Amino acid sequence: DVKVTQSSRYLVKRTGEKVFLECVQDMDHENMFWYRQDPGLGLRLIYFSYDVKMKEKGDIPEGYSVSREKKERFSLILESASTNQTSMYLCASSLRLGQGDLSYEQYFGPGTRLTVT
Amino acid sequence: AQSVTQLGSHVSVSEGALVLLRCNYSSSVPPYLFWYVQYPNQGLQLLLKYTTGATLVKGINGFEAEFKKSETSFHLTKPSAHMSDAAEYFCAVSYPPSGGSYIPTFGRGTSLIVHP
Image (tube, rainbow over all chains, first blue to last red; front, top):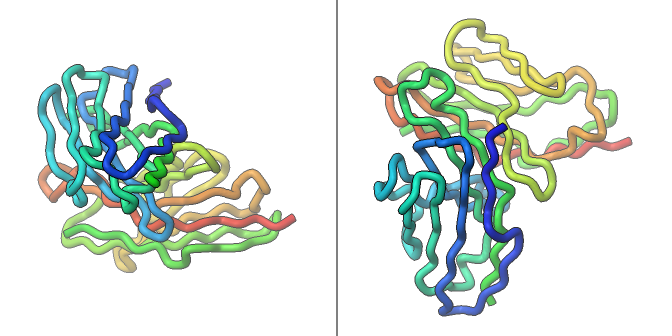
């Protein structure tokens, strides 16, 4: 079974703090993703990475950065947390393209509910 | 750009009743379509998918969905709802490499409420 773990289930931070959200997958997937989930808005892609040290902006990258130094680990960084970044953050992984249908299936972690006060 | 619309942010059914969750997509090329389920306090997990071949696809927990190209729809159904089906359901669309972005675009989600 693919397992995607996230470092914290719940996190409370103060405005202006630098926040790190960690994600680790154990299935040797090339692709990793960070989403933000808000009620009524569904999942919105923040960043994704298709290889170590490679990253691409998603739909809402402003205020976020990412780091992928190892294949299994993908970190989301909030440089200076703000109250409008209070949300559920979901990490996902998938195989690289070229693996047929399996490349399109995403595996999600349990999420980190971040509150910024 | 690819997009997906889920009609109804909340759907309420009685236990044992038919479940119907609606999903429509916009596309100029044949899409790949997915339904994911999110149980309370958990991440999303894949319910079923359509890529090519048979348009009626079956998934886990008795769910199925039918790809209807003429209606640009991929509605999710289950003949008889169970209390354990209460969850958030997300429809997603992506494309094969020749047709567009392979990264899925998710709908806004539909919360399924099951009454005893």
